[in-house]
Length: 385
Image (cartoon, rainbow, N blue to C red; front, side, top):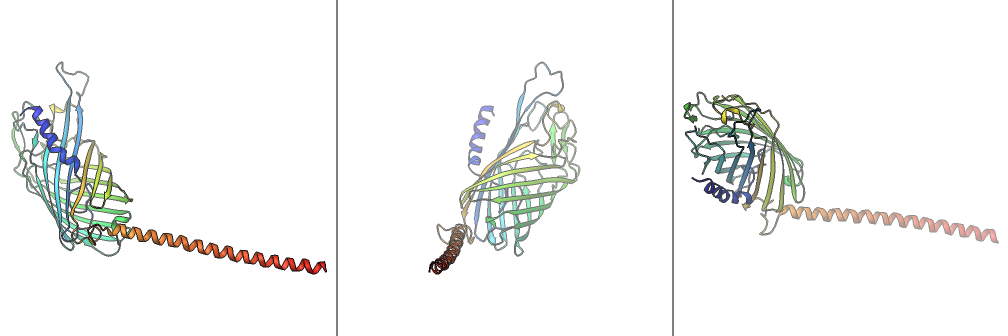
């Protein structure tokens, strides 16, 4: 397949992802899940595009005579749905419709640059438990391998097994009645089982097929802070992974990692919101994979995990269902807007009350001044007699 055709294909696949996007799962930030669930019958749609690119320059002082710089990349597009089943429970499905990593070379047997489609994630979430400002929940998730190629460079480890993930969720909302109206804090911790023993993770003309020798597992964790305004949500996430059982040495991504992600969400209407986020790696760029599993024997200045990655997207509420805070009262209504309206009325009433009290105080002072003037006038009249 020609490079030109690949570029055209990528444009057509990525174009919808520029128009939609967000994190995976119900009421999620870009990476950290909240402990809240969707109301029954509510249906959300989200797609996203994430990308990283870097020029691979030669390391060392003596470049080969025929050396040419190459632009390496990592691009993916996802589309997902979340649906409120019953109170406290919802389900989500996400399909990575496109995964493209610059993964080619004369020695690779699996010399394919992209998956179309890639893998499918399914999840069941139980949440919105608790009272007051604190909520608790849990989430079970599985990754089903639909793509042809796994063990990507620049991406989190996957060997093509049916993976299982279990997470505990916690959220604190400063406004316990309408969570979206004030700041909130969220925390996740989970266990990821990769189920990769016997899966082919590497294959080239020199080594032949390489199979994973053990089942890898890891602890996933994350924390996030969100501060909403009328038109924007300002978010900050910290999320990472620590392997409890490391993948095979032929895995590209077998080291622990940690990222911080500032993001902003623009919400012109209650039904949809645009997202823009930047992942920034704060962990080291350690590489413990075998030199055989690398680009050109580690002769290029390419990172193990991307030093940055951009996310673009939009959330869409297709059906608000029984969510009273998302248009549930009438065809146009948003209870948040109504509450804000009445709150402004109360504030104006308080201002009016303060003005009335100030007028009464001035009236009393004027009456006191008039009384003193009258007493002074009488005193002057008596002295004049």
